[in-house]
Length: 142
Image (cartoon, rainbow, N blue to C red; front, side, top):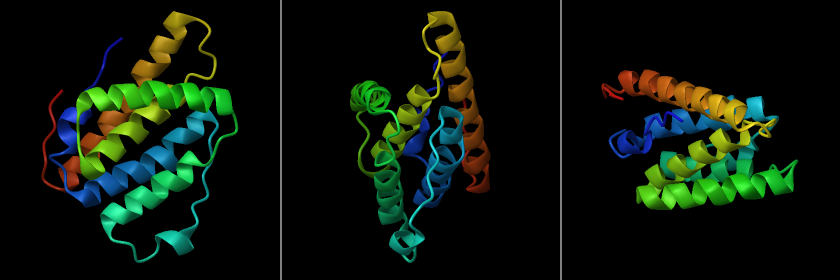
């Protein structure tokens, strides 16, 4: 499976870019996995960027329509994120992007199909992160 290493870029981006990417992951990309979050804006309004990201991810992590699938995705994403050894906000963004990526293959019984779906999700994340990074004058390379 092709792995687009987002974690190599996350610590080089400003927190505003990380916030925008996190919002896209949890509000848009997660829909492909059947997860819909309607954020509690009263808990998000007026928070500084880092706190906003933590609160948004916390709200998303409480959406668990399939506890077995979310548990497995969380374990896999957590193990992989630990290997990336990022800190602070970048670590949270890394985990949530991996977590959502692993939630997407709903019909993952066929390994090749699941790997193709994971590769597509990874490509979508890299393209979105690259698009956001350009807004903040940061160039990403694969």
